[in-house]
Length: 357
Image (cartoon, rainbow, N blue to C red; front, side, top):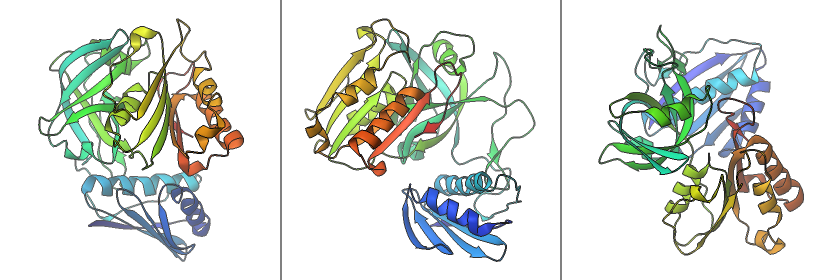
């Protein structure tokens, strides 16, 4: 196991320790007590020990990408829970400041093709993609902010977070690795073809040519939690993620999936085993984000469906995500740990929301 340690001085370390434990405990397995605890995650573990006026942290993981993610996460959450402080952070262990990020790759466009009228698939090629096939299926694309602009790639900062050398930073957008072939060094990424001027991700997907270079960081998002029964909900922005998860489901698991699309021309041929029921919900020409198709589908499920104790995964527009979450928690009484509800986008808002309900 690789390890890294730091001591962060704070005005109210006990308060920050408690907030960290409450938050991280929702995503991992906790041992210890309020003064000294460890949270184990899929990728490694983070430990904290209360000192006089500070917190001592240790993170450990089997690979440098996972270790860097844990370092980054500790520092980000300390800043979140101590917003008025700007503590200096330096780590013993892990990568040195200025080193290339272990979770960054420079990729090259190999090919592009439309798989439906509004969904375009790019194949990207790069080196050493093994880690991108584990512990998550989402990546951040690092795109040029304008045609022809030279961009800089991020490096490791002294505090364990991303740092940027002098130069123009790229625009970053989150996408799903739809398929990955580690041996060939390639991955497929699907893009919904939106109209508009301030949509750099869709613009790149629509216009990218073979040979064009793009950066990626990742993977993120974790893995699908084990269950014998699943319910998937999403619009076209979540279709690449749902399609991959459905195709990778173990044949012993059953699933129901509702996918909202613009019209029937957007249906995709997915390779599904017999235990999966897929229902396409067509907007029939209505604008994305203007319907209640997904929340209506959830509310129409019979009471007996919930007796099967499904795990629910949803990705869609923010208001729809909140309506689905409210119904699951307040009407169905579904435990929080049996659902991941993500707002992939917000109506009238350019860019990503990164809002995981």
